[in-house]
Image 1 (spheres, rainbow, N blue to C red):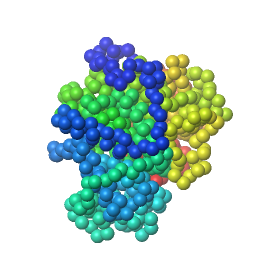
Image 2: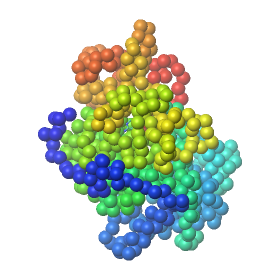
Image 3: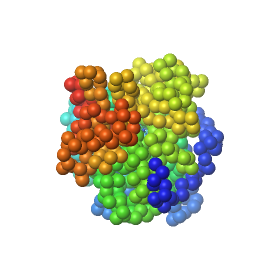
Length: 571
Ligand code: ATP
Ligand code: MG
């Protein structure tokens, strides 16, 4: 990986909120208060500060733009004003009480942020879902969650109506639209009829705040419950240290509103730091729009999925000059070293990786000021003792593969989920001895860096070897023919199981002779990594199956290989 070091101008990456990894872990010290509410204890504080300083000097709390140049900019005061009204709608008009569940399906529109804050204010439990859900998904989710209120737009309202007779818990439906619809309260209209006075609920720290669905990469999504402190306070780690945000930063996170990543990076982490949340209403991810946006707006910090970076480095980035970008991050899946090198070559910027789950805040990451080892997702976050453990729950020696876990005894970190809602057994299964297990396999090196091997189910066992798909995919993508790939196990009469790669070709290689290309790729893998890992089978495909959040669903490919049934549905 030394080649890019000489090739590109290196931008400085001195951290603003700490000086180095060790000192960061030392200074991290969060005492959880008895009572905590993010709207009151964080957002209202910024509002007060804004009033004291005069608004002109500060960036907006929310800066929303769309493709037609429409913009919404809300200061913390305006955010407070609108969300107090919406809180009154939820409480007075919809008669929702503290603890009631609110199911929210809206794309990236400003009102999505208002509902987030209004739920915090009323102590209602927010359950966000993605706009790409089907009627069946919605029905399952409403039944499983027992939500009392749904909030959505015109596109999804008919789907909801088609299943609402099967979901008796629903007592109110709120519609975001210019029109009215039978059986639905109009959100904007109702907000105009209530007062902007609202006293924020004084919630306990351990009270339920939100329920997120996991991405469903391995199976059906799990309802993951967080408390006011686990996310509201716990995501300080993400905002202050990993994203390294301050009040002077404009932060753009591209993730969809249905996933925990949006709570992480579009609500709590940036606002804990008083940073500006930047949003581009992009119905679908488009590399030109992303590059144009980074060039037109003073975005300092950018976080997107590895799959998006893989697409971005295929584009002609040299056409663009980024206006203020200085810190790039990714999370959700492993990022290929090759993509990091290319991004650095093209932009002069490093990509800082983060590893975490819906169930947690950032578990580990590369933090500014730290040496980056491409292929490793960095070191343990402050607040978590991350270890690699064996079947008995004992820590394995450095360099040895095992299950990635977070120590929960003698003290359970406050930034861990409360439970999988209504599933005590499933919750209990995540714990072994003194650890919470992530379900991922990994390794820790001598310097404490963690290396991702694969989800426990994705690891391939071939002729006595254990092979992580990620290392084979990393080797493949170093070849110019490969845009992306997914590596899974495939049945073989002699070896039992062999490595198979599904490969999406780059534009230049699409018309090449496939037989020759297969051999060329196999030889390439054998030369850049241990030969036993090379894919004995290669199939070229146009797309890889992915979750709505853009993660490769290896399980789908694997099941197809093994002739098993698989459901493409999100639920
Ligand atoms: P499900 O649990 O429903 O199968 P999911 O695990 O993909 O879906 P999320 O909570 O969104 O749902 O994702 C967390 C998982 O994503 C992690 O357990 C890990 O497998 C993967 N992941 C996240 N960040 C990284 C990373 N930097 N490197 C490797 N894997 C990552
Ligand atoms: Mg998971």
